[in-house]
Image (cartoon, rainbow, N blue to C red; front, top):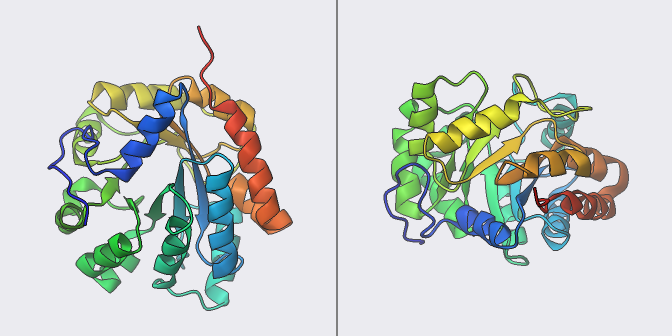
Length: 277
């Protein structure tokens, strides 16, 4: 079990695999690249191979999503992928096989992104124990707010896991402060109001959300939703600590398999280095 100090402001790196990965990228003069893939899509074995390909081609952190029957935050590409995974019999417990398969082969920090209900159904402590045992870094919880996360706060401290909460353009100053204080590893800044999906341009609101999170005390703020190419990565890397890509990678594995994931990741990583002002 990792030892993690009680957190304040999402700033402590001790024991945090996510913070360490982002800090390594920062030391290299660049933002971190975070890639998302759904567990079990198109198969459990393929999602492990794709996760390894992400890590070997430039991703610093990896999000593994748990397929869920009511994915209210996901766009049609990810919904279709997770629906297919569920139709093929994917079970929540298999997410630990995916995490273990990636962490056993790479040094990438691997987080699980999940709606909260699957965690509650397994039991927060048991889910956390199995995630830590698989080598996972922590959880990203899009539909859980810190005010309702006391059980998760205790379990994440017990098992040394990062807890990544989301902030958005709609977050009030009070909500921003509370979320930053509760987060460990990094704070996930949603760049737009809406569901996931590749877009032609990145919302200008993202920069304001990142600035507000930094002002509230967050040392590491990563931006997701709508990022799909190296130019968008470069735009966000200029002011954020990490760039999160999801839908474009799901399209890659859908249309071209693991090799396409590797190729896209390599291309996305070319946008990470911050240009001198």
